[in-house]
Length: 289
Image 1 (cartoon, rainbow, N blue to C red):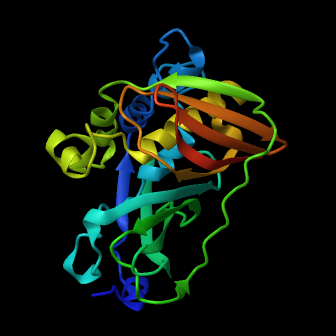
Image 2: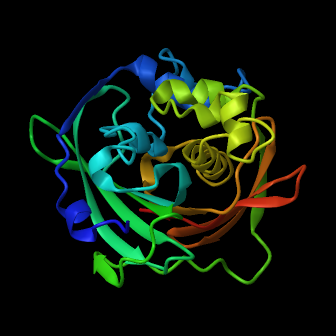
């Protein structure tokens, strides 16, 4: 049976109250590879509470704040959840994240776009992360998932999809190679995404993978690390947003090479798993002040 787009667009999600500490911020940064060089003051600013100038939060930490958890497997959705694939992801920041605090996450489905019974559908979800005291918007998180088993309902409903960001035709201005740990997925999952695909070899094999794969949002965090390291001197204060398209899975232990193009306040990026020569992130964009 095809999914009901109106039901999903109207589906209510309880607000998510999320308190996080400096320990949580350090764990997130470690999960995306910061701290590999313990003598680098820039990296230490995200993983050590005693760093000069105080602890900072990674911009992509917005991805885990106020998260509603995995809900597509609930009976009312009609979603063939085992065939769901994370396709694109974006964040918009109103200001730099605090390294500790409390937020409210308001989650909803904002768009559904049929690609046909054979191809599936695209579902657009939005999360507004706000300060519970003032009500101020801190971040907006948008993710697009491919529902490979749920096409055929017809048409487009709700918010339109953004066109992909175009990577410049010229050679990249710079590249940044960052290794991932063999245990990277086991570390990143402690941020709250406990999908067994990232930990259990049997689950990974059933999904067609030779081993558990790294979370796409961890790969996004590694790409942000490349931007901070190569272009911003580890100062995240100028980052106002990021968009990426997931094009292939990362295997923990891969070296990730991020090619970067800077044009004023816009940084374009593409990330490749170096040893396998596979593009894992494409159409990437980081917006700066």
